[in-house]
Image (cartoon, rainbow over all chains, first blue to last red; front, side, top):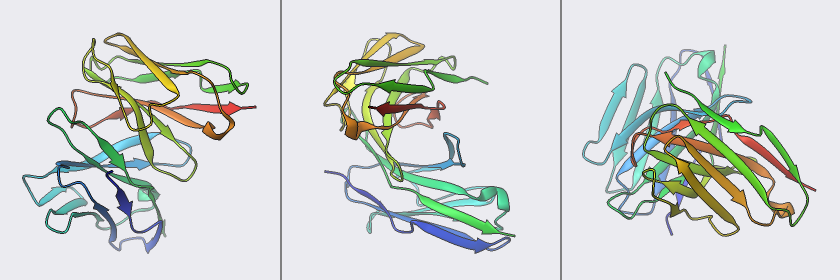
Length: 113
Length: 112
């Protein structure tokens, strides 16, 4: 079945640097790729997503890149701030009446002041 | 803005017991989801409901039942609680499949 792998289990960066979290997926039918953030002791909330009809999307300091040939997508956080510290989950989802969604195991991002 | 509430926040049950978790949303979203999150792991989809009268199994549905009582509520039943399913159960909703999901605070299940 589908597998979503998140390559970095932990990532530590200095405040102001960029952070990159990489995910790969196996199902070529996946067409929707959301990212969620989970702060300590809290539930998940949505940060950004990308659909398979584009290969790049930006929202303020967040950039998502999608490489469909390599079945890889990544989240880039620029100019990191301490409040970016959290666990980030990637997910890959199919649709068209064959709905499936699979999540990676999460990346713990630590932004050091 | 809207909110998703899950009850109870903590649920303690005995092995073999039938347990029910409840979820309510006031976003007026069509689609609702139940996930299980094991410690240090990502989410796995148990059941989802595309619209009010729909119910679909996810990849982890064995051992669970679900019910979409009305558009705003979606409940999950653990049919026979097992010790290895201690986890946090998260409910979510979205305007449709393939859109941003809004998550509730979770129900932490402990099985004795």
